[in-house]
Length: 171
Image (cartoon, rainbow, N blue to C red; front, side, top):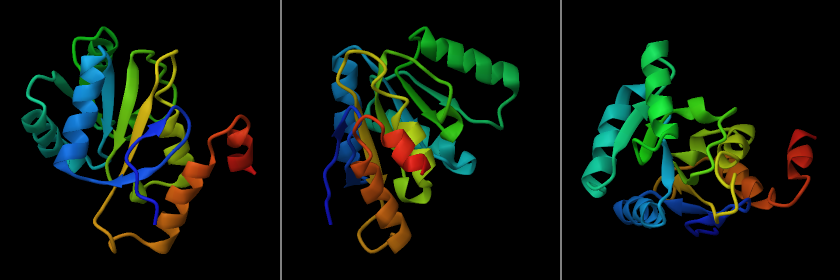
């Protein structure tokens, strides 16, 4: 099984979820003046996950966004993120489509094995929207805790890296 941690722009690899990966990837992006998405697709535990990220990277300004928030509150959080009032947006897959924020060049996807192939492809497309190197971390559970279908999806997203890969995915 291939286990790497980051992918550059539109190529993909995966890594095991852990403190070091989360801390190092966010700190690296902050040092270059950028922002991060941290996708955690469970509204019930998103506040705890934001607290976890905050403990690992206390210097980061963190906000939470998910689709069950009141629309005005969600809008304020998103506008604050766009205006660089926060560094890390801990969010659900609500960011999957339509966002184009050039300063966000790192995305961490917690439990990437629980997303579909099209979702992973869309999430991966939220970074790399500028001339800066972009990184995505498809974070997986401990070995043996992932289905065979999930393993194949993760491998496929790694193969969908060249021009025209969106069409290949659709077909």
